Amino acid sequence: MPDLDFAGLDRAAQAAFKPDFAEVGDRARRRRRTRAAALSLTALALVAAATTVGLRADEPPPPVPGTEPTPTPVFVPSPGPSASPVPGAGRPVRTGPMVAGDLDHFYLRWHDCRGEGCVLMVAGTADRGATWRSFPLPLPRDASSVIAAAGRRTLVAHYQHGGEGTPVRQGWLSSVDGGERWREVTPGRAAQVPEGWWVASHWLGRPFEEIMAADPVTGDLVQVPQTSGLKQTALVGDASAEAGIWASGYESETVMDGRLVGRGSAVAVSRDGGRTWHRHVFAGALTAGNDVALDIATRDGRTVYAVGRVGAALVVHRSDDGGLTWQRTTGSATVGERSVQASVRPDGALVVQAGVHAGDRPLMFISRDGGLSLSPTDPVPGAAADPMPGSDGYVQRTWPYFSDLWYSADGATWSHMSPPELP
Image (cartoon, rainbow, N blue to C red; front, side, top):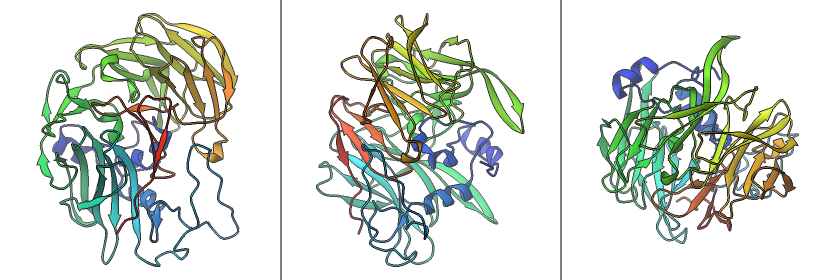
């Protein structure tokens, strides 16, 4: 999408680290990465406005007269009727994606839009949604922010405010008490991710040009140069820390019709916190859709799947030695132009989902023989299962279509967390 270019300001302020706030608005597509798109407050505002509601945070915007809302996939909760069908009626709130610190602690970024402008807030629960508390972020009205959980009660936030005649400012905040108190943080720089720190890049929704890691105890931040050699690189969010840092991208890129286009779909892995990388380039025009080369799925870092499309055909490659060598499997299916995402379940089965939202008519497949065959199955959570920070649990988000979250202790049995009734 055409965004304003704040890259120069960001480089000066944040040593070349820049969350892509336009990306946040398309986060349910989960792995979209474009180097051509930078930061746009206008784009963020439009996306946020699409989630404006009246009195509840889990309600969609009113449908356009003469249209019917598209039903959601079975694993995404269908919204109830709007309590405020007229835009602007009642007290408007805007909600963002929910994040999880563990199986009990969940957090939701939201905007309180009473009066002039909107106050940026974070709601949190420590008892799996039984009770919630809300706290303001120490930022001016109408600021923009993305948040990530780095531990049970540790949160990090990147913010931006200003523009339209006022200086643009970006920075970092962290909280170690579940969002009640925040402090300004200046990220340090390191050659590799410190042991025990949580890699937050995937959750912050930014191009994977550097690795951002957070200390789950102190909330400190560190940037690690990303030296995989890949272009338009995307961090793989569903790999555990023990499995290494995995990324997909392209061997090279070229300009086509005014935008950067990747060539040569590839995967890279680092097993020393981002200091060194091993990469592999696949033959053929592979894509996972939405400007993403491939989706990588692994549970142990040794058995790894690279899933994408060649035309309308779903293609699976498997590595049994941690990405050193790869073989194309015989498993395939026709998925059209749907985007693709995949995860490995605790029992070792590969789960692949083609299509994200209801309008895609999502398809889901499961393979219990290492990708040799793909059997269709009803869509359920699990194909976009991301590990929680420092926890054995998993989450799957529904953003930007909803702020709801699915969570699981084992990656197999899933429960649903809906946004709270905001005060």
